[in-house]
Image 1: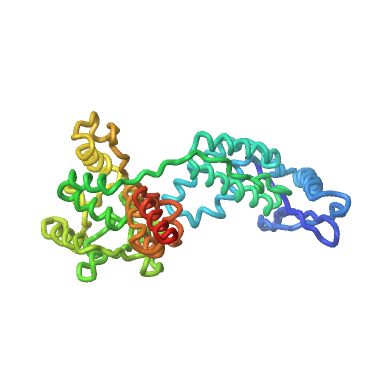
Image 2: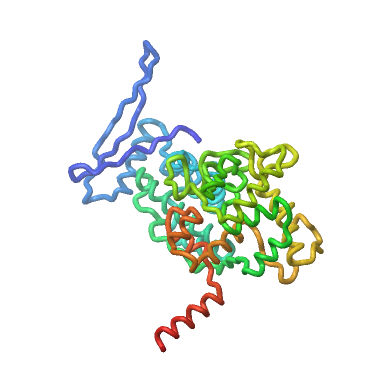
Length: 390
């Protein structure tokens, strides 16, 4: 793309004023000096801001022999004007997700000039997206579109944002499976050794996999029955923060309370480890090189086989892929975390659940994790009837 300049439109004393820059080179020294020029385009009463912008564009093109960039496309604006203002706050995993979301936008509208993006076209596309993709993606796309075009208005590329009235369409019903008490017990019964300790820990704490596999023995406080969450791991790389914590996070978000059964499990496990039991060693380490386990590898090579043994008699066609036999529940880290959030309801307050799952907001678990348990609902209905009906 060639050199461009879009200039700035200001409303001053009832008139539209256009400003743009030109560079003057000193013949003797070769140094370049930036000079800002401005001129009155017309009165606010007689022309809109968009009309004033078009006249400024003509002036820039004629006087500076530069192409105005008000016709730049959506992809260029995202990559060069919007994303640089935001990506400095994105963590590595967040950036990967955001780039993936932005890819959906640029695939559909990337080549369209900013001024040609239509509000109706945006809404129709989001409506179609909702029929084939998850609600999470649709919500993220809407948030990004509103932000991108609001920034285009802020930078004087557009007069109004075509995304300002975007609505979320009816979304597909998303299943949020969790394990029943019987299923959780069957899963534990089928696990052995380190895998059983990992599952017992997950089903009593709701740890995220990035936190679980980053645990070192120095984080284990047997005396106070605590785990101190100070780091996480992503694709084998340790980070000094987690999804909801960093070095300055309050203590409630960085400590995990342990039942005595798990303290006993971990203490016995440390004694059994001969190569991986020092303070800076990982609690659950790779037996080959004593490095941290990878979430994907453990789920494929260990968890899937445990599920197969627990619910399908170990007769899975492909042991490294999720077992899909009749009556076999879906099991992954999110399902295990959702299981914890669902079964802990009623055992404490919403604040207790928030602390246990280390969420920054108390309603996060209620909205995204806690699911209704039929027996619990029936018991609540019977209790209400007994109270109100005598």
